[in-house]
Amino acid sequence: MSGKRKYPRAEAVAVAKELCDGLKQRCERLIVAGSLRRRKPEVGDVEILYVPKLEPVEVPSDDLLLPPKTALVDQVDAYLDWLLEQGTIRPRENVRGATTWGAKNKLAVHAASGMPVDFFAATVETLVNYLVCRTGPAELNMRICMAAQDQGWKWNPYGEGFTKIGSGQQHAVKSEQEVFEFVGLRYLEPWHRG
Image (cartoon, rainbow, N blue to C red; front, side, top):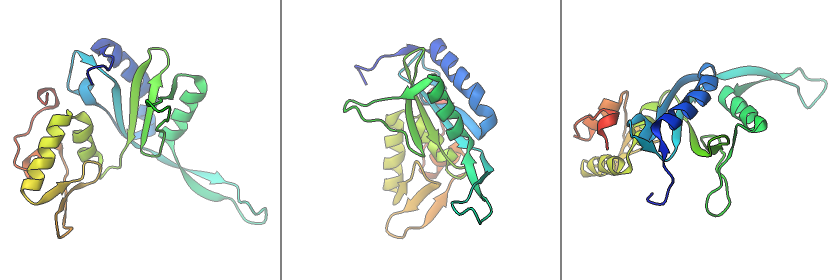
């Protein structure tokens, strides 16, 4: 990350606030993660983790003789599509010119500031693990992985918790603190994680 541009915390907070103000009514849960959550004075991007609201919408049937169907529409996806149309954000290209704009991960650029913004969709069940992972830093995530392996478990940072190696037994976690404690590490508040 040495060649990556850094942005002052105040500028990143302003971008996060602008985007989260529009997202909050479209989410069950919404939190800013990454180095911004760790209270770093400079950040390389804004990471927004959310559990979207799903709203039922009537969709016309392909067959005119059949009644409309009901589909669940992800309210965050609809809002991000609108932000794309407005030119507020755009998909971010990697070094090969490809973009990541999928159901779970959307890597964008905030057009006015040029700041990278990553949107990560979770579920209520996966939010805690995802939050620990997306808050980072990478070195801490590696420590959690290694501590889990030392005890015969595999950490599933985008899943509900841990899987016992060899048996497939699952251990779901309900809090960030439980992620740390399960692998025998002392819990650290985000701003003490590095």
